[in-house]
Image 1: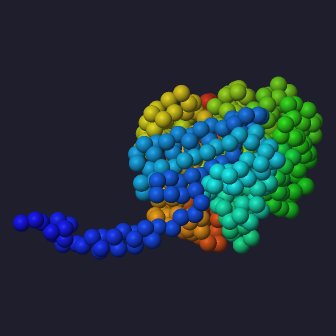
Image 2 (image 1 turned 60 degrees about the horizontal axis):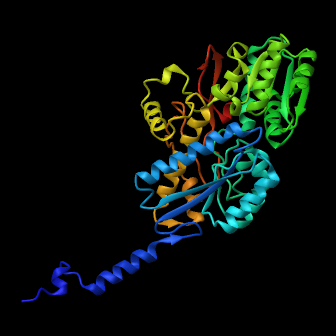
Image 3 (image 1 turned 180 degrees about the vertical axis):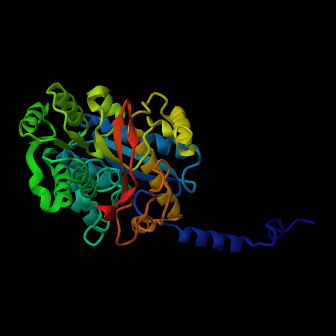
Length: 406
């Protein structure tokens, strides 16, 4: 007796199976850049030029997605990550992002780097309704869902960070006279405006502001101007290359002010070591992620996992470069956001998921700092802790400080 087709399928008819399959397919919702087997995301990064130390972030992100793909991908889909070199040039960013959106048809732009570069594409991305998500810049403008619902930041915003430095200056430095080194673009101005907001009625304590262009070969003349101003506090809002030069030049001049360095230039490998450890003693910055050179994290489970991951996926990379910690942490958050989308991989759903985190723990954030977002709050991380450079590493001090603390 021949076994019936219905019996062979365990009592389920072929018609029912086909109907069920049709419903399953219908439940999947995709936008450009997504198929049953792939999720295509991209970014721009200065792989070359004076800001190329940041390329460590893009390399870490690339390695992260390779490790995810090797483990089976996200809900069965492999991540196709495209990172293009814009050299930190906004016109080049515009050209390359148009290519990513209109030709490569990416699902989302993830972790594009630089305040001026992201500013150049801000309106375009929102007009196109393509997520500009977890951008690699702390400018306060990335948290404006009312006017730019397709753009979201990641790290603490520069304005808040600078306000916290201002409060610390006023509370701890006798007879403060503040000298400011500022990159002459939106990035530098955001820090400077935060400093002024934190000083409030004491803004007159700023005795000198020295600006520079991102492509300037050195900032030596600016440091001389700041020293000659009589400033006993040095607030440095510059990128890694200029920050290292500033630390060295201040030491050469014998200028030893209380030195506050913006977080984006706090890498031990990319800034402090090139500047000279002896020259960097006592510098203060804000932190929200663990520093791999800080011995207190040696037995931390998250740090152990990261070190093992680095050994496997980036064996030749310098673990002292905090950009690798940053790149891993933000990739973990993007990974979780994509997982939460399930089979509804639409751009609108990606932004909905990104705006729905509650006390979410991202590995390598400092203890006590979590990711929190909502449809009206596009600032995922709003807390920092101050740290001081001592020996060859950073040492945390004080309490976790939240945005409202400033």
